[in-house]
Amino acid sequence: MTDYNSSNANRILKASSDKVRVMSEVVDFSSTTNANTDTFDVIGIPANTLVLSAGCDIMTADTAGNSGTVAIGDSASGTYYVGAATVAAAGQMTVTDDSKVYSAGDDVRITIGTGAVNAKVRVWAVMVSLDQGGNAEDTDTQSVTFS
Image: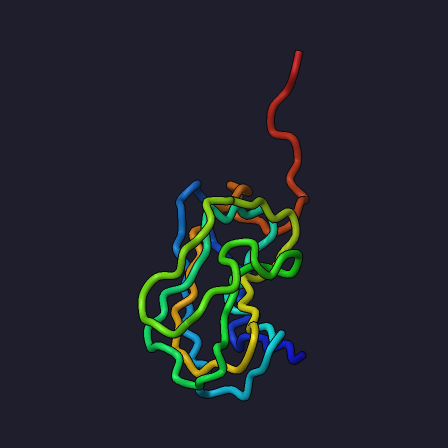
């Protein structure tokens, strides 16, 4: 198994307010030599972030002929957002409606299943910062008093 890391190591979701952000990256698998169980960390998830949903849009269908699949998840569960699905046809993949809170940084990850793929996909994630100050660390102090 090979672990591929994106050249975009940015885990900064600047959110000084509670705005929902859509992050996306295009992955062209024809530019890699991938195989079953390879992982691609595509979109950085900052600490203290709620990912509402994640998935991918198949832009160019797979023609490798290996019955390859892709799944979308994170380091804890490679299929959290999208179970292993074929990339033989263009279009949006079926996504789960499970949101997830990340107290530590992670990545939206693609995992290759069955065999190599050469599809071109757009991976996306809908995220919101839970740290209104925009700080990626849990170093905030209490700003109110209780009586």
